[in-house]
Length: 408
Length: 149
Image (cartoon, rainbow over all chains, first blue to last red; front, top):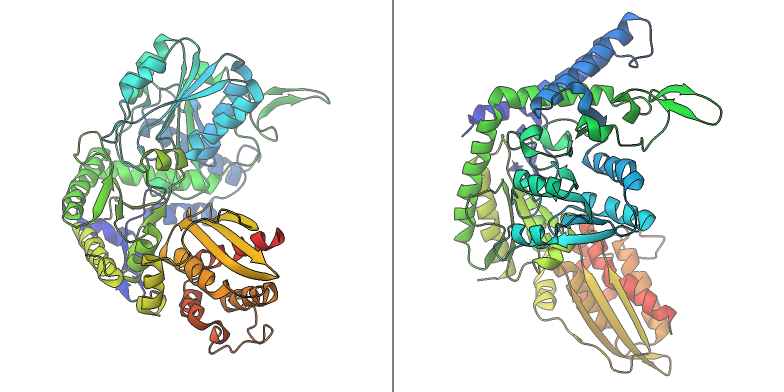
């Protein structure tokens, strides 16, 4: 496990919640930030802030250098061939919408299929529904198995040459399941489908190599990986990026503008209309450097150790049901559960009273919630700053909730 | 603010054993409400005869606050005239309105639920602002149903 002294890097962890020690177990929704990230953004604003690309003056040059260095850091972090394949966006949602609108609108039509999985977050469902309305392409879904894994065989059954897009999460934000994306990508490419991977949950927690995954597009957010909000990445294979139209027009993304038409700037700038999130990109790079210094292998091991500990501790609680794989094979640090006789929102309120922050609800995955037969679940998720003490505090809180509700 | 103040025994009792559970075959009004954020759901049937709510039936799922509020609401409105029901809705919403001035609604700030009987138990929800929408859900659903009457 990671040395608990990393907690000292996270100022927020020293505060109390209603007089109790904070056990922050909602990093899958958004993570906390280390001072290294806060300082990097602060330093940019204090010492070298100006708009990027525009100014023929030193400040702008320095800000541009910092912004482009962040792009190079991001490229290296995910194993991209070149930094020009990294597009900075507002987050995973924007990244996925850019692919749906920029690629899907151009290349999909009647008779085409978009193959998604039942465990997608709404961000990898709704953009495709919108594109389906525009193009007539049909949405099909690969089911999950009874043990909460992706039914890969069923997915392969659905895969024929009418499938033009395969959209798959690299890790479920509800179940914690990590599907075999590389295998799925290889099969999808056999039928000529585009592979779009939602990396929002995987990127913060496991080493990622987009080349090895075989994705065509890979999307993730900064705020779930110790970075700021308002920044994310869309990585795309260069030949696929070249097939994509810009979703937004504006400044910085053009080569020339005539009255009735324009030509585009080179990639990646073509897809970054307007003033980009400069400080946020610098903050994201600082977060990536922070994680790399720990080592993503270590991060993954730490999450796995805590998850295993939590699965063991939670399974001893009567009336508690876990929604997700019960072993550590191909699963990440997200544990969703319900407790008989206590609604997840009541659990969350009671746990909050004990200083424990968890998520409750459908986690922006309503199709999955219906499939698993739990319209609402409670979810604990782990990150570098969590310890077994946090899990113990969760378990104590759950016993407290059962006592308060008179549930045996 | 203690959790015990929020989860009073009367609330937990209504949550565990919801009153007026079910559907009406010949309802005069029906409405469904849900909170997209948390998934709480309420389906409400009313039988209105001679300007009176003579029967109430509710189905739903969700947290203790939304379901207890529905159960207590059903008990409170059955047998009441439509005017009395509308008056009760106003009083309940005033109790839950943490931004409004209690005096404007003619209620005692020290005991905003004084005129509400058992429903007063829900005033602890005021201290948990994210849960107010749970308590209000059955009441906004009731308002919708009354539009049909």
